[in-house]
Amino acid sequence: MGGDNQPQGHVQVFLNLIEFGMNVQEAGEAARFRHTGGQLGLESGIGPEVRKDLSSRGHKIVALIDGYGGYQGILIDPETGVLMGGSDPRKDGCAMGW
Image (cartoon, rainbow, N blue to C red):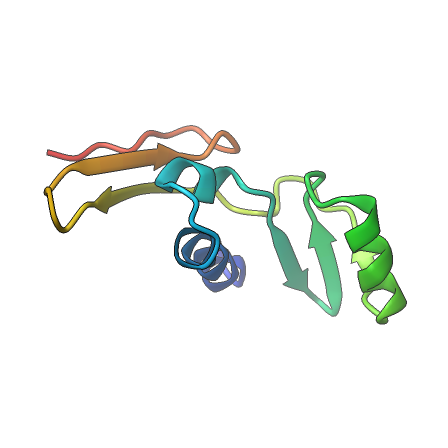
């Protein structure tokens, strides 16, 4: 499930964790974008100033409904072994570990 959005979504969640210091839940909940068919879909959490800037750079911004994937993840703290789970409110599901 996810098609051409899978690698885009994976990279966005990964960067949220590594570059932006989000926890496993925040990383999956953050607003996403999706490039498809020469167009750029932006979730509502991406503000008007960013939309305007992207449009001015030649991107065709489109509205996509449910086109941003879902997410469940488990992060293991390598020092303590503690499991931390995150589950995306966009879809049904949960993160479980043992």
